[in-house]
Image 1 (tube, helix red, strand yellow):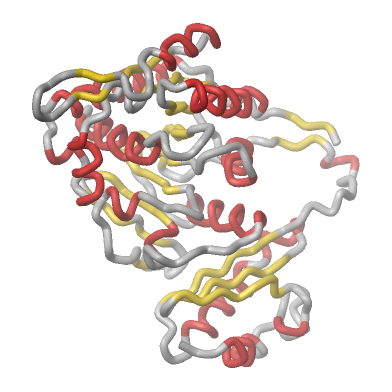
Image 2 (tube, one colour; image 1 turned 45 degrees about the vertical axis):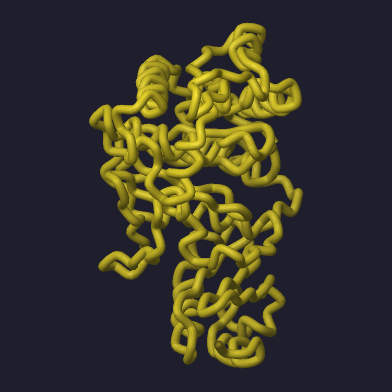
Length: 363
């Protein structure tokens, strides 16, 4: 791999955002990160000029990719809000993002905390939607802990489309999948600031060839931070699904996730109780390790639909670790039937969910 100084030397031939000053001297270079043969570059730009930065972004990618040892380059454009008031003519703006080309509906699968099986649930729900005859994609929005490459057993990298501008998601088991995990190794850490994460998510959404899709499932990172707000506010979500275990600690955080979607005016399609009941694979005895029925009770209390229960069984964990999810490994088993039933509930909920008009924010 080239050194940082060699990368900077290559970037010296690329004008920065002002079109004149070499990028390394422009003050806009926000960071260079290297992982194996991959290079990640962040550039700060003026939000108002974002639409004009495409040629500079491509020039940076080409300059670095030409260096010996570089396999791939990801260039993210970050823009910080200056706090300045926009001109009077533009003080009213639509907060909801524009639709994704070729995607009919977008839903988010979220959780208030990690460790509740959200990504495994999102993966199997996507496969359940495929079993119902829909064209489905999955965006792995957990930049710091991507799970979809392992869950789908994907090891190859996305390829560029013919126009060299967009990426083709990798298709596995009938699902189109895109994840930052395709560009980094399993044991590599991504150390990015919030604006870099936001830019990467935006690019994976808008610079991937999803069409044609009936539903795009976004596997949200746990919690209620920058990435979650970016997606909730900039993506035309048709609704959100919240995953929780039955225990009180998980339900407390699930309420926070639900509150976030309410604040951003995203309809909550319902709550799923994961790891609902442990079923011994040897004797068949049921044990409520994390309790049972907590999510159903919480859904009733919060006046949102309860979508169903997923049992805690070793087969779900084992098949997920192997990259052959339970919906693929045992498509007619009881666990797969549970996922498929919830997928059907989601289809019905999405069909009746109100289409949110763009919210107008007065600044």
